Length: 70
Image (cartoon, rainbow, N blue to C red; front, side, top):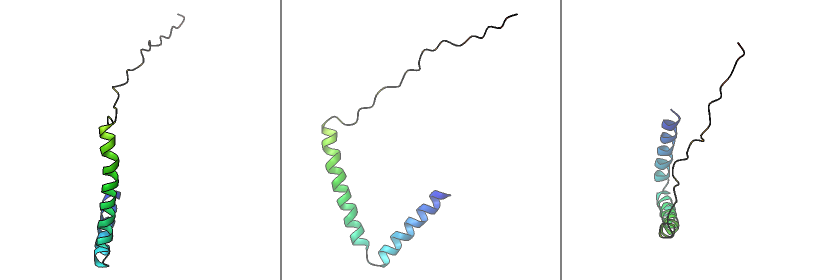
């Protein structure tokens, strides 16, 4: 439900920005963010990208045995 309200609020903000004539400024901001993240991603990919390690092995723990006196 929170996600639906968040999406509805975002749609309302975009509609209000378009109504007030601020859409070009928002589009310019997204363009600059795209260029900035692209400028970071491309050298990172060329340098080897993100290293993902394999699965962690579970420790080999012996089960605890409880001994009771008869």
